[in-house]
Length: 255
Ligand SMILES: [Zn+2]
View (cartoon, rainbow, N blue to C red):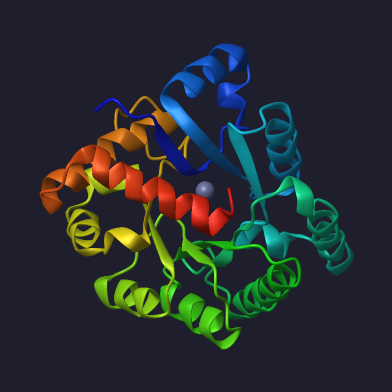
């Protein structure tokens, strides 16, 4: 394996990378063609854009609000964040992460607010012509239903952790399935990645989370471990698989 890898979704604006970011960015450049840093709250959105501006061509940003964070904001704060995204249309390659999270939200009323705000994000993404990066936990069916109802075309199912029928439904609508490094420790996700068509596959770490080495600080280049695993299961050449995945990422994010 001689190629540089990519990371389609990470949070390297996290405080865990702050102290030695210069050194980290050198290693990133050595090992990754690019990494897509995603916002999930107000601060992370601003930090993501800061990194994308500082490392053009190496770090790209998507910004949005994690569904749990989206619900915490007042109506006016939420509108303000939508405006912030729109103002930064030239500094981002996507809107997200956005979505639904029923794992952490059990209250029906708040789930309704999640859905309402999710739809507002989707309409904004369409208006500014950007792909959406979807966070979904225990809410995959509702997520995919809303995406379909809103007629979304460029969709990345980030850190996919749903079941097979959901993956098949998402694929039938043309959505991309992004496998995180947690596929390395999930038998179900390994099987799904084996069966996901290469032309709809993306790879990510969701760093600092889901570290396959269990240090608590995942690194974007750990996506290579997933590529090796998936290539082995698909009986494909690793570089050929990675090349296809890079093509997918460049296409969906317009890089
Ligand atoms: Zn994430």
